[in-house]
Amino acid sequence: MNNMKQQIHRIFQHHILLVSGIWCFLLYFTGIWLLAVTDPVEVNYAETAKEMLLSGDWVSPRIYGNYWYDKPAFFYWQLLAAFKLFGIHDFSARIFPALTALTGVFVAYKFGCYLHDIKTGLVGAFILATSLEYWYLGHAIVTDMTLFVSTSVCLFFFYIYYEEDKPLYLYGAFVSAAIGVLTKGPVGFVLPGLIILIFLLWERKPSYFIRWHLWSGLLLCIILVLLWYVPMYNLHGTAFTETFLGTHNLLRATVPEHPQNNVIYYYAVVWIGGFFPWSLWALYEMIKSVKHKGLHLPRQSRERFLWVWLAVVFVFYQGMASKYLTYTFPMLMPSALLLAPYAIKRERVVRNTVILISLLFITGLFICIAPLTHRYSAEDQVPLLQSLTTEDTLILSYGMRYPASIVYYSGHRVERLETRETVETERPQEMTWKDTNVMPFRAIEDIPDNRDILIISDETGDAVKSGELPGKWKEVGRQGRFTFFKRIHT
Image (cartoon, rainbow, N blue to C red):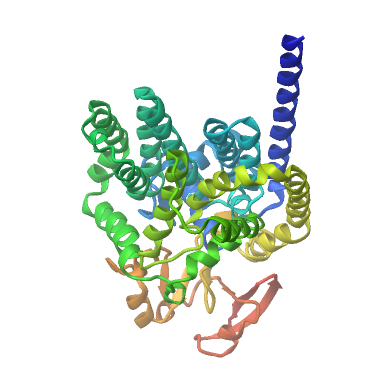
């Protein structure tokens, strides 16, 4: 009889896991083919991968025909693989962010099972999957989801090694850290490394730092990382190291790119919004715990590990000069796993919240998000542009942010039009934010007289209508956020 009950219980668990997997797949894949590649961030990754694919060079990231040292190659390899398998489409551009998000949900489930039990693991996975920022980044063409999963797997494997002394998991942790470094640079190793360091010091286990497996694992990580970094240095020399390590790492840490975000409460607000709706429940549980038990440090190793994880991510990025919405994204894994043991006591509330949020996300994608992506993309305007140009047409952008998505969807070269003085000041300069201005420029003074020219401006077209440009210009089309002008020859 007991064996039969156990078999029924296992079958029921398998059905629950199957249904949960199907639900998660639908939550992250439904409608992704409707989402256009948007300006100004997503298109940089998509265009870079597209140019790498067309050039046949899978080593050196490039954009607008120039080498581009913003990020390492791993995320571009994900996009390249999708483009190679499925073609260059909106759907293929979002396949790997969605697949990586599913992987992260599975990691949350397995981590929760390891720390507690299957039910807690499922609740932790549900909480993570239906958090606002996690769902958003599971649809976005950016590196953050890949870094999130590599960091989470690294820390999960390390914790198994810590509890069970199985070296294979430690090597797996270092491989995951290497993927993080190949995705976003040194932070892929430094962040989990700091978390592990502080946790071991708290646990009073300094002996771990002299274990042979740790140093051999570190060597493995370095070897894997150098498989890409050494060829890049050999190919590009100091141009690579100074731009990648200087502008895109050191500069971000020391000089704010968006000074208005550099406030002490920024990441607290980001966590509340990013972990919504579960952040409200988490805050309630924290307040209730303080009222009943007072402030106290966690006593169990598993709780210490998760709290160190959460706190280190918050403090690490709070200390950075540049602040972005997605930097503290890795906080969501420990947040979900810390809340799960409390949430499991109210299964009905969890179930109803998951169903409601899932329906809101999917409905919102069709009604709001898909149209918004087209609002901030040029996909719908490319047919009009194609009808206004020939192979010999010089295409310029003026009076607006550089329309990178036009380059991505049309395949045309678009030059940013500025005065000669502005061109000189806006060109890439080492260790300044202008180092990211890798688009082609043209001075107003160098507009040729004998070519067919199309100017792309914003939806008002006021910059062109102001008469600052030489010659006479006629509006020949208007669609979405773009107005198109051609020169009138008299």
